[in-house]
Amino acid sequence: MATLTTLIPAYKKEHLAEMFLGLARQTFRDFKVILSDDSPGDEITAMINRGEFGKLIANLDLQVVRGPKNARLNYQQLLDLWDYRSPFVHMQLDDDAIYPDFYRTHMAAHATGQFGVSVSRRWITQDDMRPVHGINLPRCVAESPLLFVPVREKDLFSSMVPTCNNWVGEFSNMVMSAAGVSRFPTPPADGLSYYGWPDVGFLLESVQQLPMVYIRDHLGIFRQHAQQSTNRVINHSGRVSGMAWIAAALHAWQEQRISYAEAVNAIMYTVGECLKKFEEGDPVLNEMYDIVQQHGGSLAALHAAFTPFWLRVLASHPSTDAATFARAAAPARTEPVAA
Image (cartoon, rainbow, N blue to C red; front, side, top):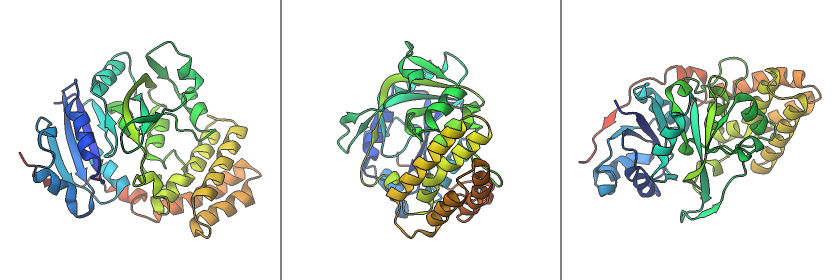
C-alpha cells in the first residue's frame, strides 16, 4: 500500500504536462496516482494512450478512469476510488503544479503531530508559471517562528469566515490525512453546513476534528488564467460557490464560532461580490438578494429564511443534490493506459 494517493480531477488538457512534471520530479516516491478524466470526449485519456506525455508519466504508478463529467462529482468519485487505501491523499488540480519537495515536506509536517490536513504556501502565477504574488497570512501564522505551524479551529474560523478570505489555498497545495478526509463535506439534506466551496468546506469541517498544519514554505504554484473554473461563474456551481460564504457565516454564527458582527460582515461582503460577479436578472441570485433584504435585520430570521432556499438550490441540480452524493460510490470504468 502506498503512503499517499494523488487524485487528479482532470478536465483541462493545456497544462497537464507541467502538472505531470511536478509529480514525476517528487523526491518522495511512495505514492500512486488516479486520474479521473472529465474532459470532453475523454480526450485526456486519448492523449495518454497516444503517449503524448512520454517520459513524464513513465515512472508514475498511474491509473486512469472515466470521469462523471461534472467537477463536484469528480471529486467524490476520486475519493470513492481511493476508499481509504492510503494514509494520505493529495487532490492535484489539472492546471496547478507542485515543486520537487512538496510531498517530502508535507509528510514531514504530518510527522510532527496528528493533523487533518497539511497546507503549504503557493505562488500565484500566470500561464508562464513565473511567480506574480503570494497571499498574506493571518497573524496566527505570520507571527509564528515555526516552519510547521499548527492552526486550530478557533484561529481558522476567525481568520477565514468573517472576511470570506480563503488565505489557505485550494486542494493542490494540501495533503489530507485519512482522518481529515472523513470530514469531507457532501451536500446537506437538511439544515446548513459548510458545504459550498469544496476546499473551504473541507477545511472548516476537518479542523473541528483535528488541527491543520501550515507549512510556511512555497511548494507549488496556483495558476490564474482565463479558462480556470473560478472564472466560469454563470452556472449552477458558480452560483453555489458565490453564495456559500453566506451559508458558512450563518452556520458558524449559529454554532457560536464567530460573532454576530462577524457574520453580518461576511454576509454583506458576499452579497456585494455576487452583485459584481453575476449578471442582473439571475432568478436564483435575485431570490437570495430578496431574502437578505427582507430578513437581514435579524440573523436568526435570516437563518430561518435562507436555510430552505439554500437546500432547494442545492437539490435543484444533481451535482449538489444530497441524493446524488449518496449514490456517488458507484464504480467507475477503468481505462487502459499506454505503457
